[in-house]
Amino acid sequence: MNNLIAFCGLDCEECDAYIATRDNDQALRERTARLWSELNNATILPEQINCQGCRMDGSKTVFCEQLCQIRHCAMGKGLDNCGGCAEMETCAKLGAVTAQRPDALERLRNENNV
Image (cartoon, rainbow, N blue to C red; front, side, top):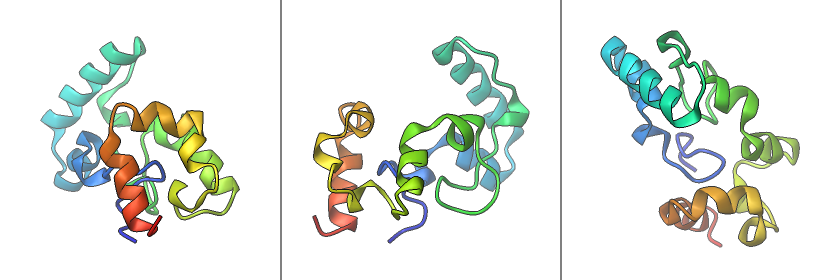
Protein backbone atom coordinates (compact mmCIF):
# COMPACT_ATOMS: atom_id res chain seq x y z
CA MET A 1 0.00 0.00 0.00
CA ASN A 2 1.21 3.48 -0.84
CA ASN A 3 1.99 5.14 2.51
CA LEU A 4 0.99 8.53 1.08
CA ILE A 5 -2.62 7.41 0.74
CA ALA A 6 -4.42 8.70 3.82
CA PHE A 7 -6.63 6.53 6.01
CA CYS A 8 -9.66 7.98 4.17
CA GLY A 9 -8.24 7.29 0.71
CA LEU A 10 -7.20 10.84 -0.17
CA ASP A 11 -3.79 11.14 -1.81
CA CYS A 12 -1.44 13.12 0.45
CA GLU A 13 0.76 13.88 -2.56
CA GLU A 14 -2.06 16.12 -3.84
CA CYS A 15 -2.42 18.05 -0.55
CA ASP A 16 -1.03 21.58 -0.40
CA ALA A 17 0.22 21.04 3.16
CA TYR A 18 2.21 18.00 2.07
CA ILE A 19 3.53 19.77 -1.03
CA ALA A 20 4.53 22.88 0.97
CA THR A 21 6.37 20.68 3.47
CA ARG A 22 8.07 18.55 0.84
CA ASP A 23 9.19 21.58 -1.18
CA ASN A 24 9.72 23.90 1.82
CA ASP A 25 7.47 26.38 0.00
CA GLN A 26 6.66 29.25 2.36
CA ALA A 27 4.44 31.03 -0.19
CA LEU A 28 2.29 27.89 -0.55
CA ARG A 29 2.11 27.56 3.25
CA GLU A 30 0.85 31.14 3.47
CA ARG A 31 -1.74 30.70 0.69
CA THR A 32 -2.93 27.42 2.20
CA ALA A 33 -3.20 28.91 5.70
CA ARG A 34 -5.31 31.80 4.35
CA LEU A 35 -7.59 29.47 2.37
CA TRP A 36 -8.01 26.94 5.17
CA SER A 37 -8.67 29.77 7.65
CA GLU A 38 -11.47 31.06 5.42
CA LEU A 39 -12.94 27.62 4.75
CA ASN A 40 -12.91 26.62 8.41
CA ASN A 41 -13.70 30.01 9.95
CA ALA A 42 -10.66 29.54 12.17
CA THR A 43 -7.20 30.98 12.50
CA ILE A 44 -4.69 28.73 10.78
CA LEU A 45 -1.14 30.01 10.66
CA PRO A 46 1.44 29.26 7.96
CA GLU A 47 3.66 27.52 10.52
CA GLN A 48 0.81 25.04 11.07
CA ILE A 49 0.92 24.02 7.41
CA ASN A 50 3.45 21.22 7.75
CA CYS A 51 2.60 17.62 7.01
CA GLN A 52 4.61 14.61 5.92
CA GLY A 53 1.53 12.51 5.20
CA CYS A 54 -1.38 11.16 7.21
CA ARG A 55 0.11 7.68 7.63
CA MET A 56 3.77 8.68 7.72
CA ASP A 57 5.95 9.45 10.72
CA GLY A 58 6.66 13.13 11.20
CA SER A 59 4.72 16.36 11.22
CA LYS A 60 0.98 16.60 10.60
CA THR A 61 -1.39 19.53 10.29
CA VAL A 62 -3.40 20.23 13.44
CA PHE A 63 -6.50 18.82 11.76
CA CYS A 64 -4.88 15.57 10.68
CA GLU A 65 -3.02 15.04 13.94
CA GLN A 66 -5.69 15.98 16.45
CA LEU A 67 -9.11 16.46 14.88
CA CYS A 68 -9.54 13.92 12.08
CA GLN A 69 -12.08 11.40 13.34
CA ILE A 70 -11.37 9.06 10.43
CA ARG A 71 -7.65 8.85 11.21
CA HIS A 72 -8.30 8.29 14.93
CA CYS A 73 -10.90 5.61 14.23
CA ALA A 74 -8.70 3.65 11.82
CA MET A 75 -5.69 3.90 14.11
CA GLY A 76 -7.81 2.80 17.06
CA LYS A 77 -8.87 -0.26 15.10
CA GLY A 78 -5.27 -0.97 14.08
CA LEU A 79 -6.07 -0.58 10.37
CA ASP A 80 -3.71 0.51 7.61
CA ASN A 81 -6.62 2.48 6.15
CA CYS A 82 -10.41 2.47 6.02
CA GLY A 83 -10.38 -0.06 3.20
CA GLY A 84 -9.66 -2.73 5.78
CA CYS A 85 -12.78 -1.89 7.80
CA ALA A 86 -15.96 -3.96 7.48
CA GLU A 87 -17.95 -0.71 7.89
CA MET A 88 -16.22 1.16 5.04
CA GLU A 89 -19.24 1.29 2.73
CA THR A 90 -21.65 2.50 5.44
CA CYS A 91 -19.41 4.72 7.58
CA ALA A 92 -20.82 8.24 7.91
CA LYS A 93 -17.40 9.72 8.76
CA LEU A 94 -15.77 8.27 5.66
CA GLY A 95 -18.88 9.03 3.60
CA ALA A 96 -18.45 12.74 4.31
CA VAL A 97 -15.12 12.58 2.44
CA THR A 98 -16.02 10.12 -0.30
CA ALA A 99 -19.25 11.95 -1.20
CA GLN A 100 -17.05 14.87 -2.25
CA ARG A 101 -14.15 12.74 -3.48
CA PRO A 102 -15.37 9.40 -4.91
CA ASP A 103 -11.80 8.79 -6.10
CA ALA A 104 -10.83 8.30 -2.44
CA LEU A 105 -13.31 5.43 -2.03
CA GLU A 106 -12.17 3.87 -5.28
CA ARG A 107 -8.55 4.16 -4.14
CA LEU A 108 -9.39 2.38 -0.86
CA ARG A 109 -11.16 -0.38 -2.75
CA ASN A 110 -8.25 -0.81 -5.17
CA GLU A 111 -5.54 -0.65 -2.50
CA ASN A 112 -7.33 -3.28 -0.42
CA ASN A 113 -8.72 -5.44 -3.25
CA VAL A 114 -12.28 -4.83 -2.01
